[in-house]
Image (tube, rainbow, N blue to C red; front, side, top):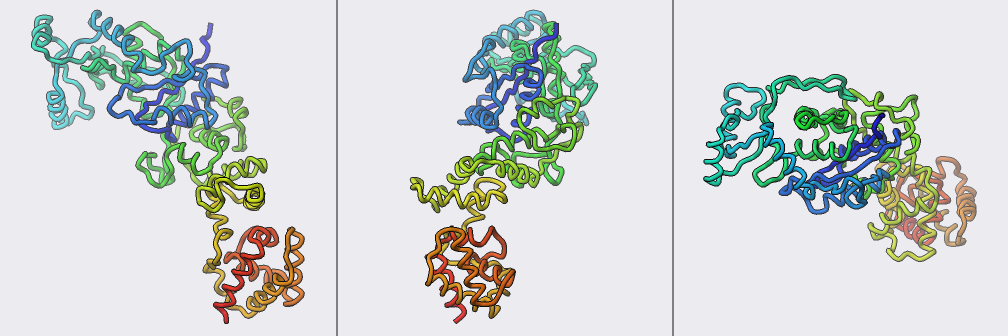
Amino acid sequence: MTKKVRVRYAPSPTGFLHIGGARTALFNYLYAKHHDGTFIVRIEDTDVERNVEGGEASQLDNLRWLGIIPEESIDIGGPYAPYRQMERLSLYKVRGEKLLANGQVYKCFCSTERLQQSREEQKERGVAAPHYDGTCRALTQHQIQEKEAAGEAYTLRMRVPEGTYRFHDLVRGNVAFESKDIGDWVIMKTNGIPTYNFAVALDDYDMDITHVFRGEEHLSNTPKQLMVFEAFGWTPPQYGHMTLIVNEERKKLSKRDETIVQFVSQYRELGFLPEAMFNFFALLGWSPEGEQELLSKEALIEQFDVRRLSKSVSMFDQKKLMWMNNQYIKRLSVDALVELVLPHLQKANVVPVWANEEQLAWVKELALLYQEQLTYGAEIVVLTKHYFEERVNYEEEAQAWLEASETTAIAAALTTALQQATPNSSADWEQLIKTVQQRTGLKGKALFMPIRILLTGQTHGPELPLVMKLLGKELLVKRLAQFSKVNI
């Protein structure tokens, strides 16, 4: 009987949810949902000194924001609890003692200084992968008792068997590691806290994990975890190691890379949509059949096939992310669009926090005007800043138009028209433009470009009547006066 699929995302709270972590979680989630399995989130918090405040909450909160919802986790609970490693220490201790009793691990009393010295000596001899030299491997029981009586601290080291560790990687195919290149490794530190490879293997077994999808940086950890499974006579899960995510220069994506926004919370704050991020992350190292790239959560779950996981690096294409987010923004309802942009306008102090109905109606019109070109929520502030400034800031491209005599004539006609009318609807503003056309005899670009530049300082933008309606008569009169003073 085939076991039900159970996969896990197991972050360390040493940082916040990162691009790489989000992709790992997503691929595990998609695999579980495709096979009607279970996706769990557990926390690997044994690196106590490096854990950061808020790291755990960031992982869980931002996964849920993305729509990657676990069935079991530290805050939901589940039949395999606890899901936090520091709450499982007694389980690791019992297992470690069992291996010690069987002679599969041994006590190592080497100091940090001694280990560092050995490492340096191996490097000087040209050893490519320095590893433990086995000093304590053959200690007699008497020697061990003497060291313990002297109060010497010890770690527990795996007695690595000779041989080759082979496994079939779901992404890379057949992989092999020689045990002689690994060396006896620590499973339990002096403080009684397990090392990563020991704890993660025990957790995977205890939680019935069937498949593990993770980044390729974990590939070298796999033989150590296989040793743990072998030591207990257990069947290991199937492993799949996803390729690196690289930047647009095809360099490994690093948390220090300032050319790319790194954390999911930052995209969230900028006003990216979770559905778009979900879609985009799914295409980082996996491809659907056909050319369709805009795929719903349901479609991605249905199509997800590990055979389509890429064997080559995945480029984080920021332009593609912007394009994709724009496509999702275009689909938003009016209310959802306002909900997206309003906080950013309020943060910029151009719309009151406690906006009244009239102000909210104005924001709605503004948002609809820029929905087609908006690539993320916070961009609304940049795109519409000229609506909130009394003075016009003319683009460099506009200078030639400002010096033309036709522009002066248009400014005069527009000023007069505004003094004689108080337009309200878009139709009223269209009529006002027609009035200026009749008085100047100009039409087409020769009419519309100067009006746009006079009122916004820009050479491109949404439909003029709608822009003029949002700017309002009072502000338009002030801006025309600004031009007139400069051109007296």
